[in-house]
Structures are given as C-alpha cells and as structure tokens.
Amino acid sequence: MNDFESIVIKHLPLIDVRSPNEYKKGAFPNSINLPLIGDTERQLIGICYKENGPEAALELGYTLVSGAKRDSRIKTWINQINQFPNSIIYCFRGGMRSKITQEWIKEKSFIEIPYIDGGYKAFRSFLLSKLRPSTIKSEVVLLGGYTGGGKTKLLNHFNNFIDLEKIANHRGSSFGEHLKPQPSQINFENKLSYELILHQNKHYQYLLLEDEGRHIGKNYLPKPLSNLFNQGYLVLLNTSLEERLINTLEEYVISSQIEYKSHYSEELGLKKWYEYITSSITKIHKRLGNERYHQILKYLEIAFNKQLNAYDFTDHIAWIKVLLQEYYDPMYEFQIKNTNKKIVFQGNYQAVYDYINNYYYK
Image (cartoon, rainbow, N blue to C red; front, side, top):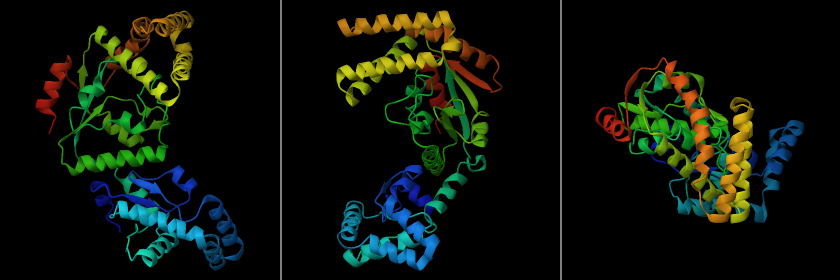
C-alpha cells in the first residue's frame, strides 16, 4: 500500500506495530499502537542483532513473542480489524515487523490486511513534502485582531479555515496551555500536513488562518511555511474592549476552570488553575514591569477569593483588563503599525464575517 494521499483523504485507520517508545516519538492521525514487540523486547533483539546478526535476532524475536503472548497480540489485532475492516498496518520501514504481523493475522483469521510500503519512514516523508509552500495552491487570508476578539469563533464558521491552535492544542498566548499536553513536534507536523492535504483536495481558492506567530506554544511551523502564511492578505477584526473582556473571562477563567475541575476534584482543580494563572503571569513579569505585575497578582487574588466565597466571577475582569490594555494591546498595535502584510479590510464581527463569506469562502 503506497497511496498515501488516499490514507489521508479517506481517513483510513492505521495499526502501528512499532514499539510504544517509537510510537510516542511520532505517529500518524487515525493510528493506534498495537505493537508486535514491546520496548524491552525490541532492546534485546537490537542487542542480539549487533552481536550475532539478523538471523539470530529474528529467532530471538520469535522466541520472545510466542505462545500466549503471540496469541494475545494476534487477538488484539483481529479485534481492531473487525471493528475497522479497512485498517492498514505499518512499522518503521515496512519490513519484517509488518510482514510478520500480516502473516500471523492471516494464519488465524484468513484476513489479508495490507501494510504501508516503506512504513512510517516513507509516509512521514510524504507528509513532510506536503508542508512545502510549493504544494499549497490556495491563496492565504489571515484574520488578525486584538486578543480576546473572537477570531477563532468567527473563523470556525468557514470550512476552508485551518485551526492551527487546535492542531497544537494551545490557545497561542502566554496563558494558552491546556491540561492535555501539546503534541510532539512530529505529531503536530503530521496533523498539519493531513489538514493541508484535505484542504487542497477540496480545491478551495483560499486558505483561512488566524494571524499567528510561527510558534504556538512549544510547537512551531516550518520556516518556509510560516513565511508563506505571512504573505497572506490580512483582515482585521475590531472588537470593543467590553466584548473582549467577556470573551477572555469565558475562555481563560470560566471554561478553563471547568477543564481543571473535570480533571481533578473541584477544590483541587480550582487550586491548580489558580497556580497555573499565577505562574503564567510570573513568566511575563519582566515585560509587565514590577508595578503592573504586583497589581495584576493582587487583582487576581481578590477575584479568586470572591469567586470561592460567592461564586461571582465579575472581579476577574479587573486583572484581565490590565493585561489586555497594558500588555497585549500595545504589542498588537506595534505589530500592526509595522506589518508588511496587505490589510484588505477591517470591521466589527458581523462586517468581517460578511466580507469573508462574500469574498474568501470559496
């Protein structure tokens, strides 16, 4: 099987038979790790290969994965295939592990399951090739605006939008972490490549993106791709401070606390949320300046204590307002003043929605 584009477009399920450690370093969307050999087994086989050669290593592999262990792994693969009959196997190079897995499945079930020719390495190379600017035929349109303006919410109305923050599992700010960790850089690139392939397959004339920096948390765009995106048309969303305060309160306080409380207990979740916000403020201490830093921490403490006692979130507006007006807004205004991007339109939420819908949703 080497029709890599079909794997992406058809959302074909993948069975990764590499070891768990290999899978953690990087894998593909729609894949599940059901290894032929585990980490310890792989290590022992590798030592044997170096010391005694490939035949001895293969013999050791059959010894290590035999009897009940072999039957258990075959059963796991067959259960997955029964649930997803169009599954495809892959190992690192599409070699011995894929072939053995394929043979064992066929022996037990008579199912002829395909595997990826060239394995993980070949498919990964294909996905990386799709991150080259030359493969992107759509014109890029960027949506910029003040922090808290509702850019993601607006763009989610359009199917030709690729949400980089969603792919990176990060909100794209100093306070943007979620409890679930960000993907590895490899997995971020793989997922982004999938999204770009799906976008190109639909033959959209335009690609909608938020006006992001190259880095989204710990993930980052390949430099040539970032340069291409930064050459796009720029649309600016103008949102009132009052609306931005409400949006930020909802996303970074109310929704974020729900996330923490669902992961921990309610009491511990709130404590963990408060610690995270405090540490995020501390990370930008130097850029805030000492006076603003302590002012924000004081407002946060007052708001949090009031929330605990009266379940009232309104006082959180005070520290959010200082952050927006005295930290994020000046940075945004400096960037817009010095941008080389072509600003083609600016307006309020409805005006920008209508403009994109009329001119760039195609």
